[in-house]
Amino acid sequence: MILRDLMRLLGSARRDGRNLSSDEAYRAFELLCSGGQSEIQIGAFLIALRWKGVTVDELTAFARAARALATIPCRGMEDLVVVSPPHDGFDHVPPLETAAGIVAAGAGIKVLIVSDRCVPPKRGLTAASVLEALGLSMTWDPAEAEHWVDKAGFAVVSASGMLPGLMGLRRVRGEIGVRTPLATIEKLIAPPNAAIITGAQAGPVLGMAVEVLANLGHSRGLAVQGAEGGVIPYLTKRTRGIELTGSHQVPLSIEPADFGLDECHEPDLPMFGPPDDGYGTGDNPLLVQACGEVTRAAISGETSPARSATLLGAALMLKTAGRAHTVADGVSLACESIDSGAARRVIERLRSMA
Image 1: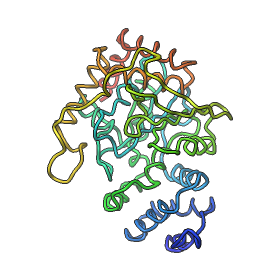
Image 2: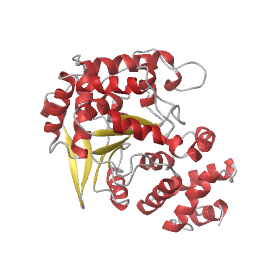
Image 3: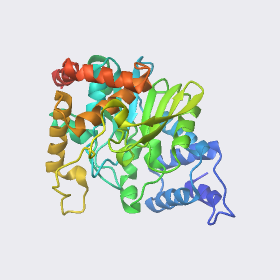
Image 4: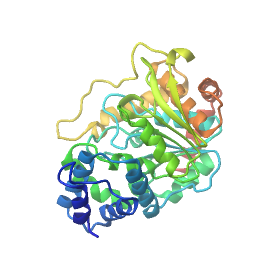
């Protein structure tokens, strides 16, 4: 079966198409990453799938295929939480999952952020941008990522480093110009034993995200609708999430005022604007540098919206990993990580291994 055959199953109209079976969806993802399909076929398939609407069973099969093709680090590692923000990044807020992950690692868990650099369609700022500004780096080598997590408690690994087939899809994704199910699948490339916290876009997608995590066999997870679809909660309003604990799916509501972390505005970036070359914010060196400055200030304990957002993000990671029983407990552990210097020592350990 080739990709063109699978497109026929999706149909040209809702009345004459159908959802893919698990086996068909698994095969479809293999074909997408094989390099043997034309860009026109790949683009048409992704748009047809987006138009039809992807199902939980299809996403689960896509994710299983991605995991089978990928080289995934940290399998079997205890106290591990995998953080999966949107890989095409952010335009309006700094990617504070990096700061939050470092703070959570300082509080005693192991954190692996799955990210990438300048992914279409947005080509926004990501954890890779922050690390570059800090004089560190994301790794494309899964073995190196595992070493960093084991020794420093923290690493950022490239999704396309784990699954090189994703790199071959970038041109198509850029030409399509809208998010497709690939944006969800790449966030699910993670060790099967790990707790996962993943960002979700606005809309009725939280339940679907958690169902996919449960179908993949995870016993702990959290899908959260943070700023720009990220994992960091809002500071000016309530953030919705759904938590997976064993076989239970529990709604989670994060009110920043409950923890004394409400602010008048969200963490923001200087108004440098994107470069005038058709690229995104992730290519803007001034914004990359600004991300580093915001992250340093948050980890140093400087009072700001970025620090408040970092504490809330770290608290969710600690709760998802099982280190904290409640979000409030997680905020307390995150504060201690910053105030004791434990978070800064995580950065020092990473620098010593560079």
